[in-house]
Image 1 (tube, one colour):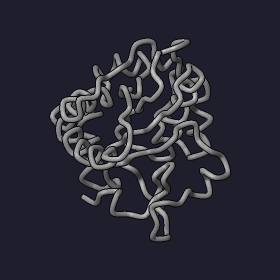
Image 2: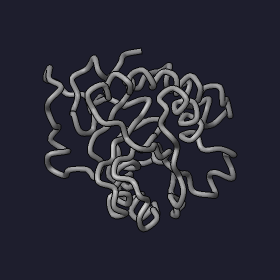
Image 3: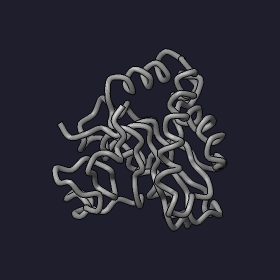
Length: 202
C-alpha cells in the first residue's frame, strides 16, 4: 500500500497534488478553508483498503478494524514526532438508526485498536449525529456537503483544546468538516483529522 507521506499532498486536506511539494495548500482549501486544521491520512485509497473497509462496514468483519488500526498507528507516530499529540480522538459518530442497523460504529472499532498503539484515549460523550442522512458514497461532492448541514451535535464545552477526529476513509472531507465545525463552536481550538485512507484525484 502506498503511504500518503510518499505523495505530494495538500498539508490541510491531504488531497494529492501534481507538484512535488509537501508544503502547499490546495486551491479548494485556500478558497474555502475547512474547519479542521489538517488531515493526516495513512494511505492512498486502493482496492485492498476498499475491501477491508467494505468487509468491516457491510459484512461485520470486525477483524478488519484491527488491521486498519494497526496500519495507521506507525504513520501517526511518524507525523507527530515534531508535533503535539491531540488530547483525545473522536470517532465519527453514526446516527442511532444506522448504528442500530449495523450494530457497531466502524470508526469506533478502528479507534479501539489504534488507541492501544498510540496511547490516545477515545472520547465520544455528548457527541452525536442527530440527522439521519443518506450514505455519503451515494452522493455527488456538492450534495455531500449539503447533506451534512447541522448533522452533528457537540456538548457546549467538551473541555479539550486539541482533538483528532477519526474516520475510516476521507473522500471530500465533508463529514469531518461538519463535525469539526461543531467542535470549534464548542471551544476546541485545534481539530486534526485521522483517516486510514484518502481518496485521490482521478
